[in-house]
Image (cartoon, rainbow, N blue to C red; front, side, top):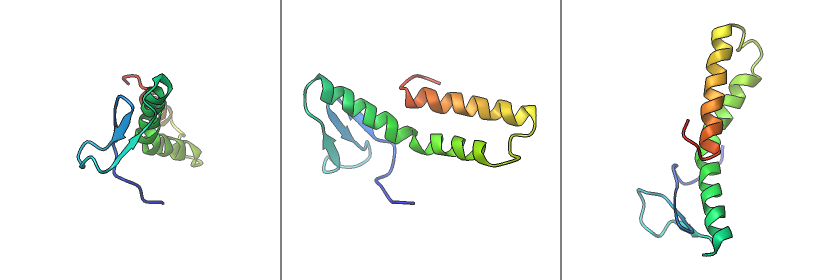
Length: 90
C-alpha cells in the first residue's frame, strides 16, 4: 500500500489541510465556486477511501456473506460508507 499523509483531511473554503499538522501541509484549490466544490469533493473521497475499500473487500470474499446477519451487517456498513462518501451523515 502506498503511503500518504494521515487522514482525516478537512476543508476550509478552498483549502484542504490536515487538522493536526501545521499549515505547511495544505492544498489550495482555485478560490472560485468550482475550487471550493472540488476541495470538498477531494476531502470526502480521501476520507472515505479506506472504509469503502474495506466494505468492498468484505463483499468480494467468497463465503463471507453466507448468513442473513452477515449480509445485513455488510448492507449497513455499505450504507454508512456511501453516506460518508456522499457527504451525508450516516
